[in-house]
Length: 174
Image 1 (tube, rainbow, N blue to C red):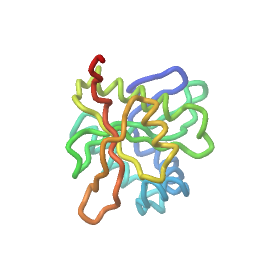
Image 2: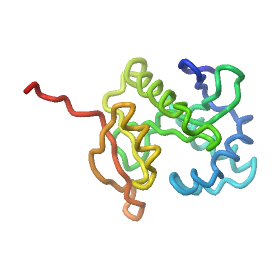
Image 3: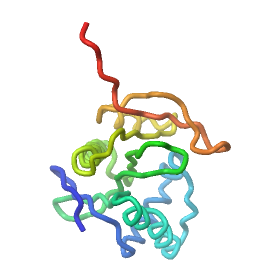
Image 4: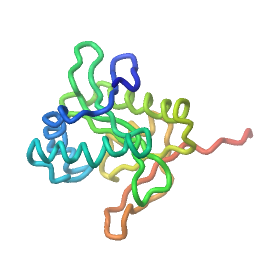
């Protein structure tokens, strides 16, 4: 089911048949380095990741991570969506693209569309984002969609320290 479209992308809910793509994406070196090793090694693991992650999120919250594909030919290029995480008070926008689609503006396009969807359609209040401090490309995307660094956080006591990005505070006229 298509959730939203942008100029060049279609974002839709994941289905179990997307497992092969998810298996590839979650094992890309940059995904493992910056987002984490999800332990997905087989098609069955990828289906379980989909069941416990995006599919469960759609059921529980009415949103989740979506498959991002090219509008022109339907090629899947990554995922982008809204996530409600334990350890984070606000919903956050998350994204990951296959490295062969980096540096073409797709991440900014997808993340901006999802942020607008969360605010306008889902009427979510504050939407934030988290990033590995070393992930300069993702940080640039977050800044381009209007989020600013707020503070360092940990999602769990022993988890890695992450940068939290939030909507820019309103500026007072000077």
